[in-house]
Length: 91
Image (cartoon, rainbow, N blue to C red):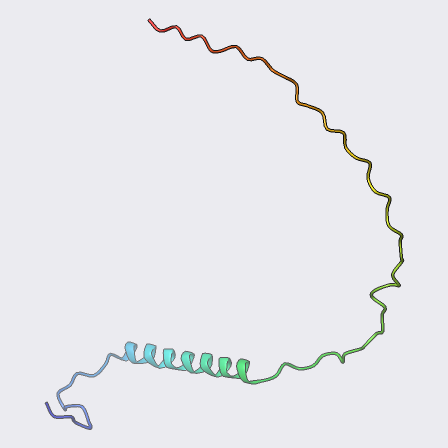
């Protein structure tokens, strides 16, 4: 098939409503693209200048002596528990 630079003479034209819808869609896509380009390529306005206020965040450290060692924990044996063997009734 040959490539033509213009459509054939007997080609049906698009309906008028569809042409209007297509034109509106193209305009909306163009407006959205322009808005997105503007939003991504412009710097936001500086509303307020930065003010540096000197503040001491960490106070002077307080030196504390070592705590006395903990007393030893006495170890006691666990109590002896006597458990009778289970009784099974097998008939």
